[in-house]
Every structure is written in C-alpha cells, then in structure tokens.
Image (cartoon, rainbow, N blue to C red; front, side):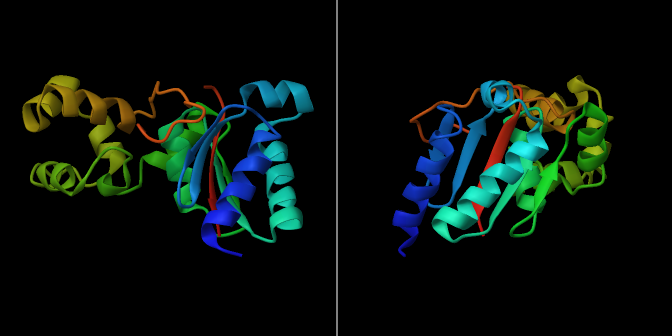
Length: 179
C-alpha cells in the first residue's frame, strides 16, 4: 500500500474517533480527543490503545502515539515513542519529568539556531531553559522567540487542533505517526 493511501486510511480511522483531526502529511496528525474521551467513556491511554488496535487491524500498521495536555508536548511524546508504543503524559508532573532532561533541540519550536544560541549560555536541556526568566530568554532570542521558548519549555502551548488544515503547528491531543 502506498504511503499516501495508508495516510488517508489512518486519517479516516481517526475521524471515526473524533472530528478534531489536523492531518500533516505524509505521516502525522494532531488529534484533539477531549470530546472522544467522554464519548468512549475512557481515559487517554485506553483511547490510544483503541486507536492503535484499529490502525493495526484495519490498516496493517503499527502506530506511535503521544498523549499530553497540549500539541507541542504530545508531538514530543510521539517522537519519543518507538513504533507500536504509547507515551502517555497524563499529568503536568509527568509532562515536566518528561521535558526537563531532554535536549533543547528536541523542544517543539526550537530550531538549530535557537539551540545554538541557548547553548552559548550553557542552556542545553529543556529543564535549564524552563528555569530561566522570560526577560533573559527574550534578550537572548528576541521578544517573540523568547516567549515561545519560555512557554514551550514549561509545557505550555495553546494552539488548537485545526480540523482539515495543515500546519501551523486541548486538552488531550494525540500525535500519531505510522510506524
């Protein structure tokens, strides 16, 4: 099966769980499952298991899923999940424990130039960046990028899932990557 066809099948599978699916071809989707949790009367980990089982049974593919309180952390959790695995960060404490030891370049929104700039100041981990005051990050990176990195290092991202739209990059999004 072609990658494009598989992606369309997986997107269709997700749309049967929730209408809040933002497809990001060729192999990712952000999914807001807040309403689906109530509908299926289950938690995020169990719903992720249901999605994985359906992907395997109906599409023949193992998927990686990251579940967290917002899109950025869920995307990072998904990237950290090996194929067929789920990384579920159900609480702010779990999110913080997950984020703090990770390298700055793993932070959603931090490109190579941002990572290099922060590295020059001895800021190599997301936890170290999270401990720096906003004003200091803005002096290092500029006002907008400093605020973005300040928020993301603290696990904050208020971007909603935009159904039918591709990037730009609510309570419980799932990042899905076919494995």
